[in-house]
Image 1: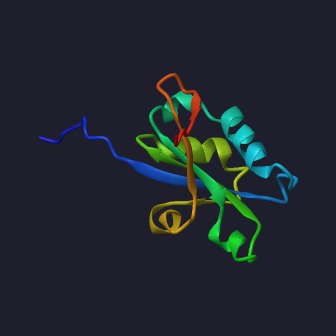
Image 2: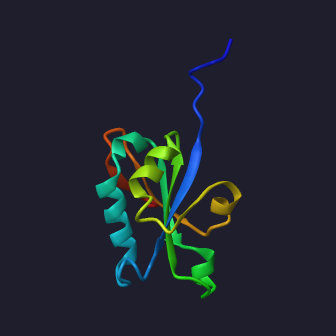
Length: 117
């Protein structure tokens, strides 16, 4: 008998074009888009990573990535953010990016900043 309670942990990165975000405070602008377009309660207990992509750090692109790691339905994110995203990263491609832990989503669907004190 199949265990229907088994949950899959996913990692999905949303890549934004820095220039399309208007430069400047592009990380904050990307986070504003994500929080306004997603039902964050569907991402409860997810870890949130973010940062410039490796290609951006190597001056080969101008991309910023926000990633979610946890139990969620990736299609939900892709549907909500498809028109805002340059592309999506998963698996090894996502793992290769030098993203930083910026926080998590609590059970109420609220972003909680990482505290490393």
